[in-house]
Image (cartoon, rainbow, N blue to C red; front, side, top):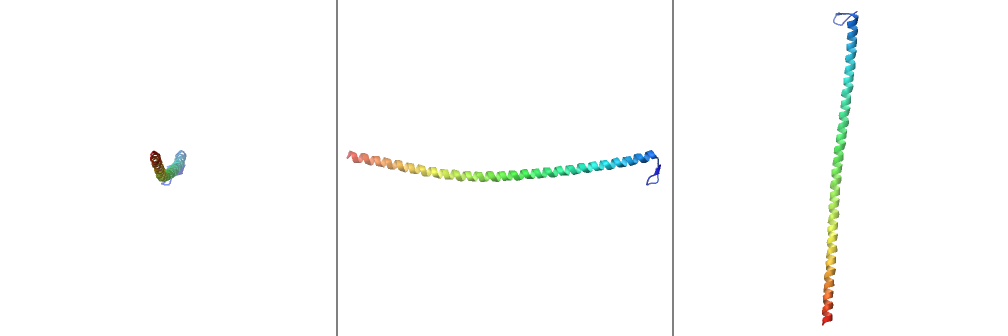
Length: 109
């Protein structure tokens, strides 16, 4: 038998039951604290994963933008080169026609 803090007399069974309940409550509090820490750790991991994903997306967007600009530059260069080739080809054809016309005129006279 024992007296509790408020001066109430407790039988041995009641005392052991209270000690047991107290230990159970302490264990449950510890379990809940572990659960809370685990959830906080998981939230932190999730936050880091989300931040890494956002960083990756920004990086991919910048890479895409750079590749798009590079493609536009290549496309412009190609268009300019094609135009130069076409102009050269046309100039050569005009010269061939002029030479052919001159040949015909020279040989007909």
